[in-house]
Length: 285
Image (tube, rainbow, N blue to C red; front, side, top):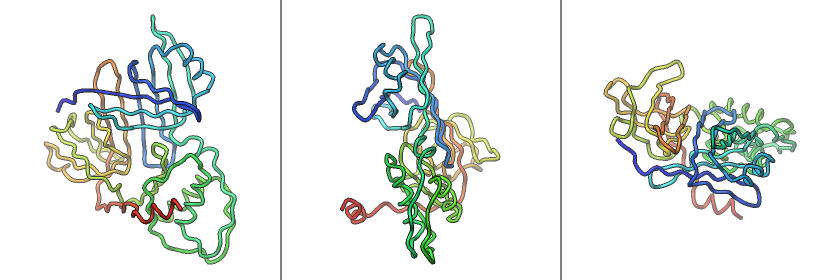
């Protein structure tokens, strides 16, 4: 299937303002995984004006968000800018942004609080998220209902404590596009399965690897880490539903293919429950 009407929008921001880029050439390489390590991205912009180049080189802008689509835009990456460099290619100036999703939260967040007896893993995760002030709440499913038998001091890197709780719950945690995700290995996101077939843009046949089934397709912004895909291949053996554990997007605004490459694992999965409206109201109070 051909996907026409490519669009992209790159937002570069700080706490005061946002610079939106839609007309200039933009190229991107994005890698995401279901584990806790920050997701890296390399985003390049051609011929940005000199004032904005200087602001970026001076680290005046800290955040980046990239949305792409075919007619309708959908965000495929959000993260922290960790390094900026400029180079000249002929008459063009190319600005390269090296980015890391949840970089500050992962590297700098520390917990220092006292938990009361009876605290659950869910409550501990909520306390840990408070140490990550700019991280939003994503899909969080914590099956273990155990309670602390006595009070406990929580002191250490938030990422290390989250990893221990995830291990106890047979789950993975990560920051995806600025949101905290905590997903048991037998659960998937609540969205509908994304169909991957020749008719929807699958390229070549699926390939079995040590990490799972590897698929390549035309870039699909609906694909998400922890999401469900339905594979329909010419090789019927591979047909079925899978969970996305690795995802890479790549493309260039001036031409060439926009691709998504994903690694998926099979199994019997349940969808996480969407938050109830009453829960959302309670959190706002």
